[in-house]
Length: 293
Length: 131
Image 1 (spheres, rainbow over the protein chains, first blue to last red):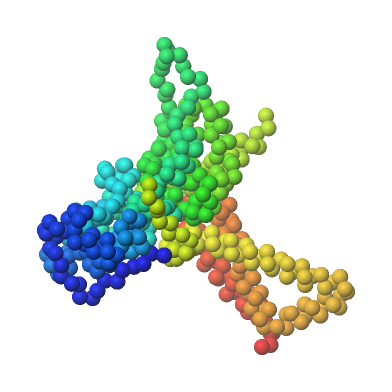
Image 2: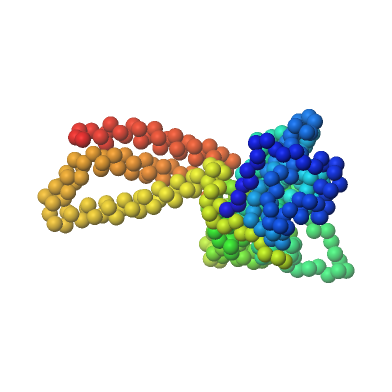
């Protein structure tokens, strides 16, 4: 269980954010931590900032710093701007108050899938979540069901392993002779069918929200199954490859582990109908096994 | 890589407030399923008294039905069975890929229907019972 830090009613005034001492790894704050001391406040008190501020509570854990080996929440007050996202807020907190605050982010436009956090009890992309839509204080935690490496960074190895299990690459039954290579055309209807499944950005939000995946480490998980759907439903791969894909999916820890709880579909930042795809693959697997000719 | 922190099951179970419709439907379906299996054994035990003779069976049933608590449990049993049937139909639709975008509404509908049927059954079940 993580321990939540109590914020004092009357925040003690402390270094202004402009103070260079507040930045860098050797700030007084870090010194204090190394001695195992608790930091009461890492933020500028609300009344010192002009204009509207946002109160965020960020999960902190660092196995290499003595004071942070017990997980806790730190409070930050960041100035609010119109259109501000959760990622903007944690970046401001990192750049202004505590440079040791660690999280993954890259493109800031919901394409790279780096910054999936657990925000106010739901898996969301930090860069896609508007502060204005959230209740304050905003609790920002690392993705559940995955081990925390540091602060908001989780270990994604298992997620990637599952993704690679389903062979997430195009396979062709008969690779044409290089001399007569042709375009491999796909019908507009078929493209439409796999369109949504091809939007996956490997952020891991669905896998983190899935209670079955939490209880069964071997379960492929919604993201991997959706990835398999993208290729299995692609007409250009041919029947044999499709059967091969279904053989991977219909195993004990494949599609049949899905209990249609719809958690994955609800949290997917790209609105992929994951449960629908899993259900369709279940039906395909049954059809394949009923086929006796 | 250094050690990492596993938040574990305890914290996980604390997340029940974050469940949404589909998750609750799953939990209720599991729960009602187990209840019905439990009832099945009780049911067989009561019926088995008929092996001794018609009177033993009549006495057993009569004795049970005269108890207020049994009548209340019967109302509960009806609620459990009705919900399991309705949500089962919902899951059948989900398996067939029909109306997946309305899966939460169909769960709420099965809850409401269950409530209506259960309330409507109360006068029948508690008819002539003495406390």
